[in-house]
Image 1: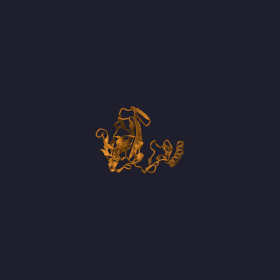
Image 2 (image 1 turned 180 degrees about the vertical axis):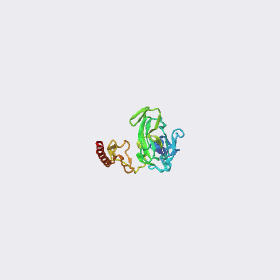
Image 3 (image 1 turned 180 degrees about the horizontal axis):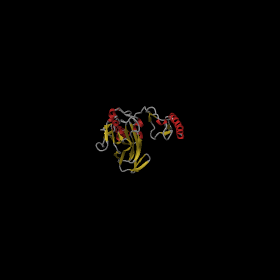
Image 4 (image 1 turned 90 degrees about the vertical axis):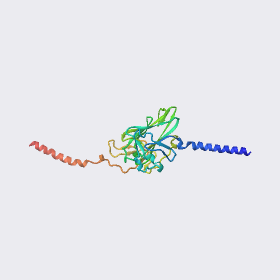
Length: 283
């Protein structure tokens, strides 16, 4: 009887342990990550246990920069600020190839921080995934400001040899190509990135930013006044820019000045010149 009881207890313990492993140990965030790199930097293990490898593009493509090391990065934990302080940039389009051998739902997380420019429209570029533009006109400073962490999170899926992302589908050959596309404003760059299996709910979120304002519900497409300009009056908030950084008062529009005062002396001079010329002609 005692032997039977001991066997039952051992079986229950094993069952509980197997369930705990299935619910937690086998699905930890670090184990879901299939590929991660610290662009422009060395290896790093973050607070979630994700192992970022040294940049494989070192000495091959673009330039590495640690200019941001002198700056504290907002929205990031102190232990992981190094992921946003180093970066790789290039004077042309560049990217990384990520091998993926299993079907399923995946998330691409791309980390950025603007540590050099201090205003918007200085660095703007796109991000492509196997030819699909998944981030359009990324202006990091415009999104979050200076020396502030910003993550772009792109869900995608691979099934039956097809890649599906943001409503678009293409043939998948086992290699995910993440490209940072050269635009009209400076050079494309990236600080770090990783690919994991899972859904949006599985991705760790950055700390909240006190300078970001969330629009009221239903106002994501709200139009705001633009003072002057050739199109005259309204400017739409770009899609994807749900949160805006308050960067001080609006710069006065130089074209909105009232120039009527400048016309009075010109009209007076013109009025004097015409009669004078008429009198001279009669002489």
